[in-house]
Amino acid sequence: MVYFSLFFSGLLAATLFPASSEVLLLALLQQGYSPLWLFVAATAGNTLGSCVNWYLGRRLLDFQHKRWFPVSAPALEKAQQQFQRFGSWSLLLAWLPVVGDPLTLVAGVLKVPFSLFLLLVLLGKAARYALLIGAGSAWLT
Image (cartoon, rainbow, N blue to C red; front, side):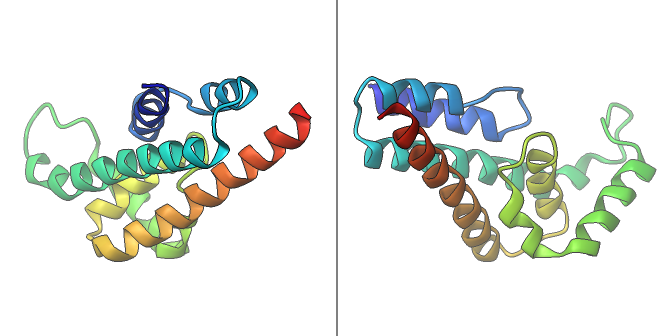
């Protein structure tokens, strides 16, 4: 149940909702839970949350003609230009606060192939959680 909580926390943190999984991860690490399973749960949940954003991005433009559409045309154009400027490799930074979640959404809008998206996002998020667990383990001992 603890690992599922971390999985869900990671998933929620990767969506456009304001949340964080790092505090829970470090608290569970301090309580002696398996670093490997903490890594797997956090990485899987956070990556799945980014996949939700990618899917929403794929569907987003279907609604741009609606009055309630939340993004202005200039803002959408600017986001697309920024993403294209740095390319798909920027998805390795999908773990970053503030910019990471919108980055995964724009990747969906721009129809980045899912296999490439998944690989880059998974690598970036796995590296972040590995470093966090490594640093947390060193600090706790």
